Amino acid sequence: MKIIAVLPAYNAQKTLEKTVRDIPAGSVDEIILVDDASQDATVEVSRKLGLTTIAHEKNLGYGGNQKTCYTEALRRGADIVIMIHPDYQYDARLTPYMTGLIAAGVCDVVCGNRIRTRVEALEGGMPLYKYFCNRALTLMENLLSGQNLGEWHSGLRAYSRRVLETVPWERNSDDFVFDQQFLIQAACCGFRMGDIPVAVRYFPEASSINFKRGVVYGLSTLLLLVQYLLHRIGLVRFALLTPKSR
Image (cartoon, rainbow, N blue to C red):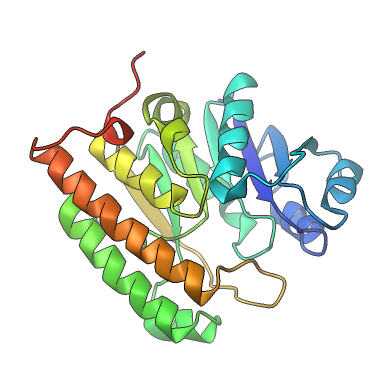
């Protein structure tokens, strides 16, 4: 199986090399970095490291960046795609374990779970309000979708090619709620979802949305859950939640 790591990057100059060095040798066949019009030397560092580098001429947003990532990974023949944030917030050493669950046919989607325990999450620097919002939204998402993920809001994810060819992610938001839309879409399509524990890393260089954008993200997630519920009971059909025609 061809495994490709995609790195959606924005101002990751200081952390990119550390992230790449943590990806175990031989665990991926190619690394694609998509730079979303960074204002630092992310592109230069990426090319120096020998990564396949794509640079957006203008900022398309976090979701818009991922759309380029997955389009390019599929074009290059990926059977499994793992998304790793190049800001060093997630432990890239988990790459072979996450992709291995997909390669073995155990899961179609694998997420990193930063909340193994409350103490560990908070000691890792997760703000208290984010912890409680994460727990509340994850509980609702699990109840409505019938899943049992430890966390729905991690940015460390691995997907099979079949997932990327079925889920209509091209319709998703270009903002941060893209991730939630993708998981709800995967659940709606009946894919097998699982997770593994990953350390929490909050530090100045790690990207994080501010409180205002966090509120928008939370409200967008709640709206998405309403849409999902209406879609599942057949009252309203949403193109966002309908598998792509193949």
